Length: 307
Image 1 (cartoon, rainbow, N blue to C red):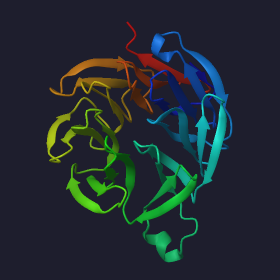
Image 2 (image 1 turned 60 degrees about the vertical axis):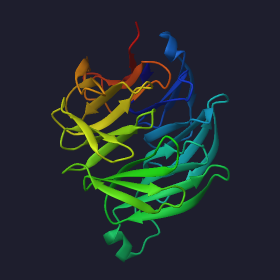
Image 3 (image 1 turned 180 degrees about the vertical axis):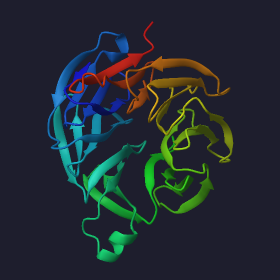
Image 4 (image 1 turned 90 degrees about the vertical axis):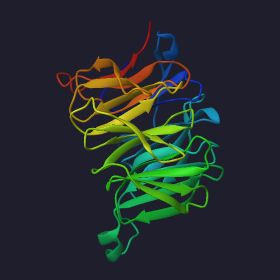
């Protein structure tokens, strides 16, 4: 399934029937029938003027998609009409994005210092924007004096998780955003996070080449996964909570391990290290970006798990 430039991000919709992918040239593609092995491109969504850095679906609305880009915007899309339904301007490049379980809020990490004083520019390391999706306006802007790499709501939407460049996991109440707990999880930067759909645990990937599984209630580390040799920058837990897939910065493979034992069950060979992976929310199908360095002007998406 092809793009002209490398795929940077991908996401399934809530029903698992549609897969979207975003590329470095700003192109967005929507693929249908991906869950049935015979995928086809149904549309190309046009609007971003820069690389699509991140995207996410809405659990309450399977037709809705949110993307953010180097063009300093968030765009909301309706995949039924292939149209952008809203554009929200950001104070900098959008680098990551998440949608609350109830669909009311989008969180977006922003890189940039627009609108800040000289003093703030010297101190602020990360900016987080909250968007009210009922009004399609920014409802809150938060700045941090340390690096925040990614964020996620818990499954029930009562808490908000931040992972940092200090190797820490912050848990904040939602919607109050009061700091509830900080846990030092790794000695190096934590790069990515994914919640187990069962709500009982979550996984993080780290620059120290490890992934780890954490109990959501007790914030105790349950086990680590050491299949990689470099930064784990993408991971995903399957819909049934049994499998953890992960990819790293340097190795051209995807590791699929059993969540409960940590044992590697499959290794998916790739032509290059992957940018992003995502399990289908209903089936054991794993989507990942495909890139061959020998063909730099061609990229795409592949799915592992078809029988």
